[in-house]
Length: 250
Image 1: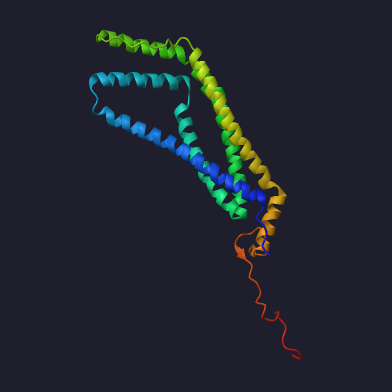
Image 2: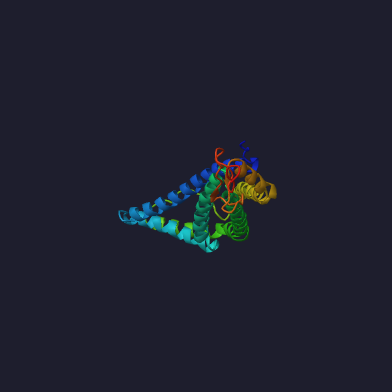
């Protein structure tokens, strides 16, 4: 008689497949967008006129202002995308293992959950200790850089376009607060889900459910251990006598 699949394994397996696919898509788009943008700028530079190159130079200076105020921004961004892709792949693999009720899927999920929680904590630490304080101080530096660019435009006989005074940090701080709230919700939900998956996977009842399912469906371990996925139990042929016995009188 077949045994029903453990509910925790099946539910978390399906959710891992779903969430892993979504996360993989998001970080893949981020990585592709960043890569194509970088390559596009490099190619465009070859055909730029002097005036266009001057405008590109201000973008570079603004980028320098940002990275000076937010140390480690580029490595952090690259590490976030690479780490997100890795965890997404790992989450999908754990989802497959849990849907087909395999012990390796359970323990791989434990590893994924621990790495995910650590990743969320590291991301929040950087956001609140480096990124947020750095961005909140960007206004005056951006204003000085833009004024320098506008002075050069005036010397070339061009009227600078109207813009906001970046010394007034109200809009920057409001936007930063809004993004912080969004990221907190996303990171909190992701970390909470990973923590919940971790607790369910290390719960002894989950292992017992795997053992019951595999045993009832003829799937055991190499030495009869129900937690070992490399051994397939063979059913005895009902037409053969037990080993060590013979016809009566022998």
